Length: 184
Image (tube, rainbow, N blue to C red; front, side, top):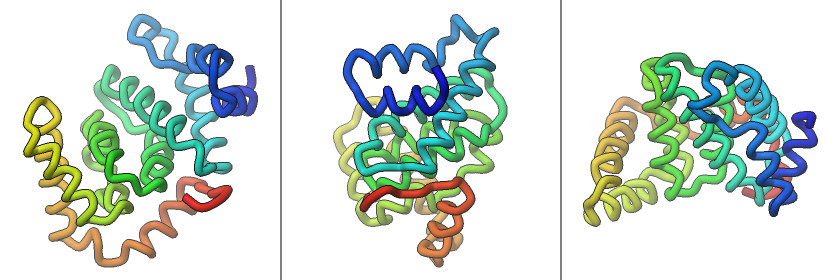
């Protein structure tokens, strides 16, 4: 199936979408053959970014989870697909996605150096801070991640990450080829 057909099938949802997911899903058992899947995921990510729809959030999040898992398994690197998917997920400005962005940021040493705090700030620092604070107060395994993510974002704000967010977002949308097909 071509990347365009895969994306169309993912957007259709249901049983066909699950079959499409199987064609690009990361699997450690297929690690030696992951390059073919990585290339397909990357092309689907590029097409998704170029035609992003308000209803694509779940697809963008799923693709980012898969790409993050592939990077974590490899232990190094930072693909264009990962950065594109981070920008696509961030474009939805949903504070609930901050831990997903945080996990992608922490996937490898290269992603820790290359993922900008501004992406997670698209949802607004106060909204994100409140969401992460709730997760911290609840305790459990996500509390530690939430505290680390909040520390990262607060450090980013302290060093100027929020100084020109509109300019950053315009740059990121252009850099990663994000074209929104409707309000997001």
